[in-house]
Image 1: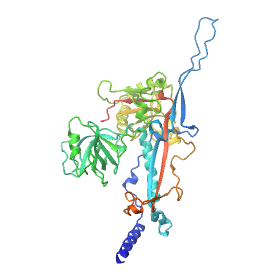
Image 2: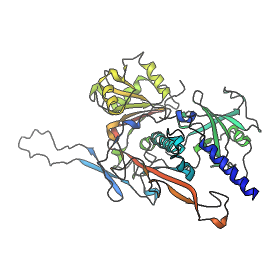
Image 3: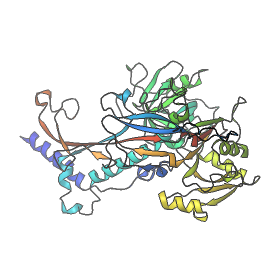
Image 4: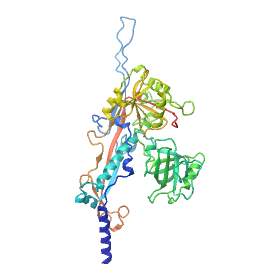
Length: 500
């Protein structure tokens, strides 16, 4: 009986101490990176996915029924209605390969006592409402991932490790190698959008050369965006293992060997995300070797679908990346007909770049005829600021017209995207619904009661599996797809040197 009382006292003490906690914002609460590009893409609730797909029809040539003739008696030419290309955006919740919508899913767990705590008078200020705070933080994670996925590599690649060293200082020194017994390691990441990596992320390391995992569930202890280094450490997950999955990882000697081996590339993916194709990303859109919605890479060069391919200018055609020059802007402008201001003052036309290219643009204006103004000091910037909070710069050139310039830390390195935002739309399979939907729950609208499970929830024992527990879970998702109805109005310049 004494043992039972001791257990009860210990339980009540733990439960009571939980009530004395209150929420303090931490580092992770302030590191929010929502991106800037997706803010300018309109959400179109008028489009409906009828049945399993939505057809998008794009006119790929003008009506050319007008003809010049010197024969005054000649009959008029046959009417020509132009030519149209149709592609489908498919919604298939059963077969991933036949589905063009992405699902941003998230889940929450809580206990009955956390729910009861909301009614306690000591927590009327909501500072102790961990459930609410967790949900709010989770929805912000969805917003971050939403903005991130538009710029992410189509395979989910976050970057590659180029070299490693012992983590014994805040400075990077490529001459210092890792030590076998070191519990953490400092890794240099190749030019990438470093904002895609954040403190606390759990990642998998993939040996590109061998085509196999090198280590699972590695913790990103710290990210240094200045010199593109990250500190990797062993996570608290018990299944942090080496490649064959049989041994718990105790050091990073394998990583050191992997990275320092000649011709070997170590890739970084969010844990469990490798192989999950990001549909509708800018990389898919601009790279004709990738599928884009229902058009496979094998078909993107067919006559019917060629008008749906955007324009790419390879600045590195000579064999190596080059610095950004004014000529690149001229090439992009001529590619879409901006020359001589023919599309001057077009709303929502944006140049999207990462910060390194932005520095290059700053250098350009000193030696060229381009001028830059803050958003609120130009007509275009004012319009875009009112439309979606644009806070970038407007760039004007007498031969190119005016465009908006935005720096998005989530944008890819080594490229600049000239995007006509009027050609982009976000659609959902269920128009009119909320962007994020919680699955119906049995309690408070979203919470479902979980059952005991000896392996997942508690050590209560297999005999009690299936018995209702005091734990609850909530799950939700956001379904979306990006469509483009004017591919030729979008240009990507690639092969740019990002090491300014």
